[in-house]
Image (tube, rainbow, N blue to C red; front, side, top):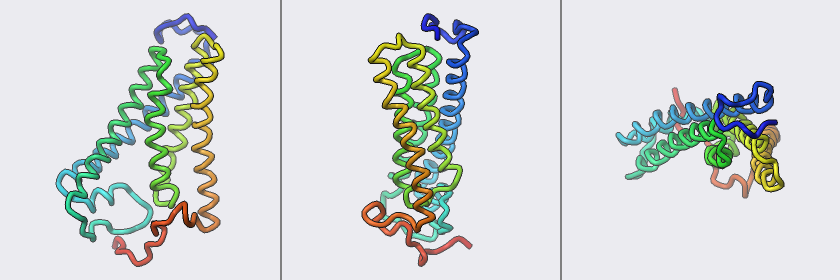
Length: 213
């Protein structure tokens, strides 16, 4: 693989693997970014007008609960504002990572890691108790693939020294670990779900909640 090109237009025509990795990484990061822009748009305006129930309903959770039927403590909306903005900002980092890949920044995988870690937080908060919808769960696999391709692309277009390899490995391992955890979580759902101490707040027990009509 060539390491002499600096800009995308200079990538050698025979560097097929780098091109494929770049396209896949960019496609994954771009999709993930737009999904999180949309999530921010769905959450922030409702938080801004103190419509916390609507913000919750817009998460599209699989519970069937009518979150607009509940009262929320004062200033709860500020949490939704922050969360929605954080989602949109994470989307920006995913797009920044694409730019870094095109410009051959060694830091590109680290920028992509920011988006990946946001998805780890979502996995812990919503996927572990099996509250998230399928499209949201799919983002776990998409951002993980994007991180892996970003790391391998960056390595192949480096000097391929021992430090370059050492830098690549944690990203690849992380990108494999999260989807593996997601698959195991699916298996545990079939077995009845997690118990304490993994899930100890009653998130999976909402039989008495007010449901959507």
